[in-house]
Image: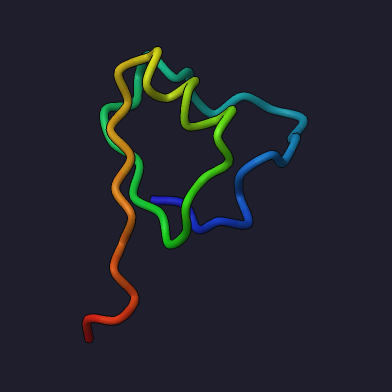
Length: 53
């Protein structure tokens, strides 16, 4: 799970690779370049519906 502020951020460590991720759940649409990368690596991106409570 990652909110929209986590995309396009650089860190000094690598937590995991895209190959080890099955699904990402986020609160906003991710940038097209990252979405394409997720598709290429078979990662499902789920957009959480903020309207449902």
